[in-house]
Structures are given as structure tokens and as C-alpha cells.
Image 1 (cartoon, rainbow, N blue to C red):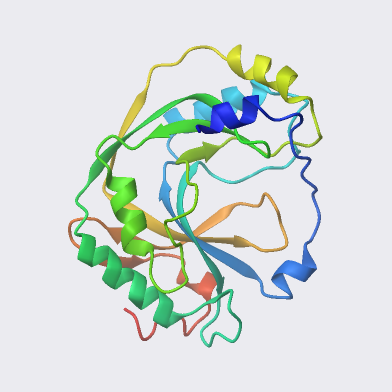
Image 2 (cartoon, one colour):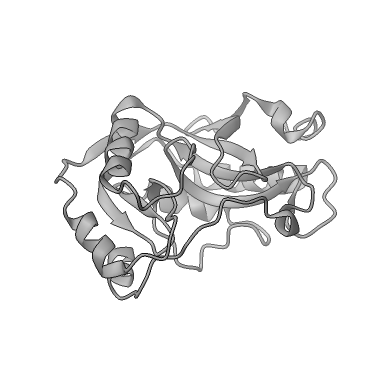
Amino acid sequence: MTARAHFAGAAHTLRNLRQDFVEWHDGRPRYALWAVDVDIPAVAQRVAAADRHLGGLLLDGYRRQPHVTLGLCGFPQAQPRRRDDYGPAALAAQLAGLRRVCCAPFEIAIGGLSSFTSAPFLSVADIDGGIARLRHGLAVADINRPDGAYTPHITVGLYAGSWPAADVLRRLEAFAEVEALKLRIARISLMSYCARDIGGPLTVAADFELGEGRLRLRDAAAFGADFFTAVV
């Protein structure tokens, strides 16, 4: 069942709350994920247009840059102690997995507006199967197992209330038809966000260059001084 079909069968959207989920992060400052960075003007403009179209339905202050999540990692810790911590050994295993699938640069196509019950999104077509290959490479140990439901997408925002799904669906269907925006993807990024901020901006810690199989550090400090020492 597609995300749109699932949404059409729902009664209401899920209301998101802007709060600090302390019981989730338990004081750990950052949460990490692998994603395709698509923060370019053409994509940002389409996201902004969708956000305006859904005015009044979405939570204020969503500041995540446009991206396509490939897999969640956990809380970066140089010395992991809890199951949802993400340490250097897990990163090394994922890098080995990425190199094993030998994923070359590939194309995706960004389409129109659709929705989960919790969040509206722009659809993403995995034209060359590159996203699927990367997710397979990232699926190591207990991280990012690929057997659950997954829909590649670019989140527009988070629903601020429990709105009647039928009404929201009509808004989604009224969004202007758009041509597929094709992008060539040559790298993926290891990102993180402040765990206290439900819609806070992403920071890129490192890029993994496809084809080359090389990890290039960017803002590595967000993961802690010692995190990448044994990996890079």
C-alpha cells in the first residue's frame, strides 16, 4: 500500500508536539542519520511552496533542510553504552557495507505532494535503484534493518493538529501539478540534529563519496572530538 493510499484510509492526521522529549534522548545532545542532501534552490522552493499550500496545518518552526533519509543511526557516542547509541564501530561497519554494495552515482526524481499521517512530504522516485542499494549497505547489525516499510521522501513539515484526513487529502490534491525534478546523486551525508529540538536544523558531519568509497569529514565536532579518530 502506498503512503497516499494509507493516508486516504486514515481518519485523522497525527498531532505533533513541540517539546523536549527528555525520556527519549536522556541528556544525549545529538541524533544521527544517513541522508541524501538535496538542499538546493529548486528543491527548497518546492518545499516552501508546499508549506505555504498547507498553511495553518503544520507545526511552526520546522527548520530541517530538504533531505531524503536513508537510515537512522542513533545517538553519537565515542563509547556506546546503550542500545540506541551510535559508535565508531557501527560507523565502520556501515562504511564497509556501503563499499561492499559499490554504489555509483545515481538519479532520483522529486515529484509532488503526498503525506504520511504525521507529516506531508514531496515524493521521491528511486529511478536507478540507488537508494535501495545504499539502504542495503547501511543495514548492519541492528542498525537500519531494511525489512520494514520505507518510502523515500522529503518532509515538508509536521502536522500541528489532529485534522480530518479527508479534508487534508483535498488540500494535497489541490497542490499544483509539478514536473519531476531529476537530480544526480554523487554523495550521501552523515547528519545529526539537536535531540532537544523536534524540527531543528541538520548538521552534516561527513560526506560519503559514491564511486570513490571515501568518507570526507565536514563538521565532525558535532559528533565529539574522538568519534572519527579510529574510522578515518
